Length: 344
Image (cartoon, rainbow, N blue to C red):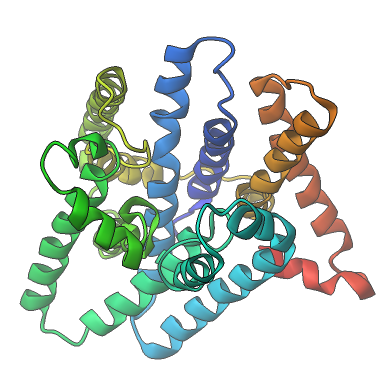
């Protein structure tokens, strides 16, 4: 029987809801500790899962140039569509609010196109493109060298992005401030840049090569280990934030183990959904639209001089993303709205 991957679409949609909660600080007014655990802990599994799922489907097909080219072309089309939609917010964020001189602002914006985000969330697309090209080139090595390079580079990158994020406050005491400042000027924040996807693409490739069910006999063990890993992740999140070690909360050391054990459990859930395509499209639309919907909330707060509750912002961004998805699906076949399909 053909393997059904509707479970991935379902988890991507759920993960997207958590990501909106993360960016909206949805539970901050209710309980700050709960907000940290849920929005800075569980929600942080979303992007690693997106990377792993994207890599899984990418590596399910033969790693040849034609397939890699089509994959990158589709992602770059998505990138440009949301870039155009996000131009007003991008100008405000990158230029109006820039603390740097105009020349440096322009340099940082151009640099961002290649190594991080030009508009909010775009670094994820850039990283997927970079990873696809990187692994395509890596395929030219023999199997042993490819595995060694993949494991070594993934370990180095994973340590670097986690250390500079969750443990970034240690950069100064360890005397690494000058080195980090130089790195950041050229390659941007490590934890929101094109290198982040490398370890998760390696993980996606690992499971793509075993997608016929070689791990199913261990799925109960994987579920138990996923639960233990999640408990350790939440402990790490709480301790790191309680001791003020985090420069950012994008990466934690326990994220990769959680995804490693959780992903095969999700693959094993051979569920069937009536409209998985809706969840697939909604995940993309909600992910990218949330930023300017939340920006709209901030604008209203500034213009009207009111404070909107965090939970209400979350609801507005989530509902707005779902309604936008329905609008796109309803109108994309009309003459003047063909371009809407590029948004997913």
